[in-house]
Image 1 (tube, rainbow, N blue to C red):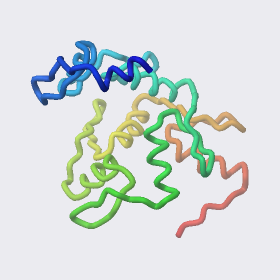
Image 2: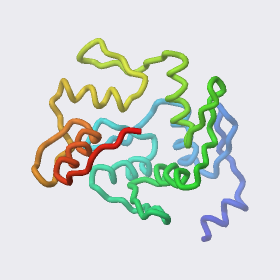
Image 3: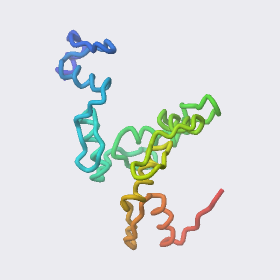
Length: 184
């Protein structure tokens, strides 16, 4: 509480030369400066992801260890990070605050709008290092690379068959349940 109170009373003497934002301590300024550079000193030991803040790494590691401390109050779906939960909540309200100026399609998040805009621009910034294929979406590249690496991270709990994509596992599960796919 005392530390928080000081945020209201202390003078902010450490200023960022790039954006003029001011901080109470040199360590907070140093952490902020990473937002202007590509410095990401916090690396995940499970994958190749790197982060500018230890907190971001801590949140990310939950994906690997299966910890999901954030829960939707409506449908009780659990999430390893707060941001995906916040995006998920909008699916219940139907709130789509990010609109495409070219086609008026609306999205739950700025990142989804950014991905969508690549349809209009034709931009494909994600290139496979194994072949000449390029992708507009990083997740599509990640799935594609598994063709080259043979990685199959999704495993059926019933028969242990492995899949390179989550959608393929979900489709496969229906062979065990007898559920039919309905196309609208």
